[in-house]
Length: 397
Image (cartoon, rainbow, N blue to C red; front, side, top):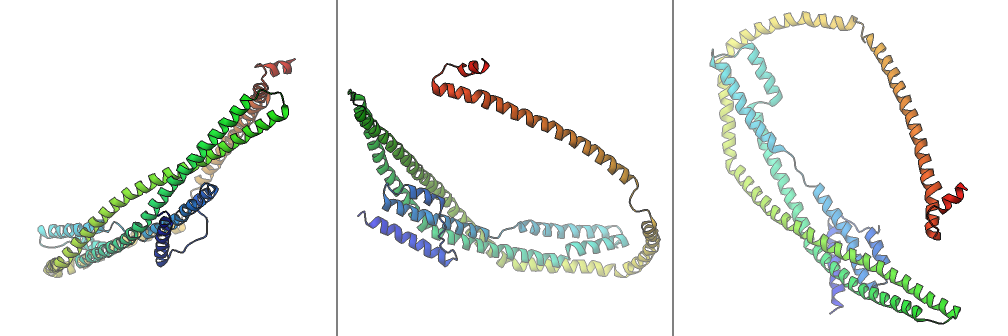
């Protein structure tokens, strides 16, 4: 039964690798840093560590694939532009109604204002077309996002199995290493006790027993480090798996909601497109009727006003152009201000440099005094078992 697990895990990783390859993600020989740590722990159980490393190697590739899917998911704030278009259409119609309300005509200023507004925002028909195109773009991008989500979730069902199995193997290796750790602790205790029980005066024998004890301490330290490392890996894999799985549950729910909203949006648009077209036609005709009503008067009035405007404005423009062309250019005061600024700036910077040179020197002297003159002597006193202040006294003498 134990032989089936590696084969099963291998098959899952093989399917995942094939899935990634089918979506343009090629396997890389670049070593995952965690694989390097697992290689250090291989003596615990080479076969199981190898299986875990195989999954870990594909973890980075899987996550790179998911990141590429995320990057390819289009989104924008086009819904705000739809809202703005609808709002601007109604607002503009109200403006035109107000222009006609007083005398059933549009003044020259109002006519020019309307033209500028149409040049910037577009006509009513153009804005309805923009609304339609924006909505279709949103629908197309939503469909593309749903497809990317389906791809990610489809691969994740296999990927999560491999993660869970690798997590189980990591805990199994941790259990094995706990036995090695306990055995090393017991061996160290036995070696230490044997040395303590030796009462003879044979220096060679005592040195041999001390060597055995020291080797046992080294072995214990090695096994403790291995245990802590595999324990951390196993526990982090547990945490990472569960957190990722919980988030994927939410992603699955969100995908279902987005799918339903997409279906509803597409259905709404397709069944109401005639309504949008009728509104476009109705409002365009309405504006055309208003334009026809005041066309002749506006033509005459507008022409006269435009000519008057051109005559008045052209003189002012010529004066402005002549002033700009024959003027003195840059203000002469700028040079004096810039010179004063540079003097103040360089004076300030020189003072800052000098202050920080002094601070740097004082800092170096402080470190030299605290460590080279005091700290090193204190550490030597501690290691040599000398009373505090011994070396200070000798130095002073």
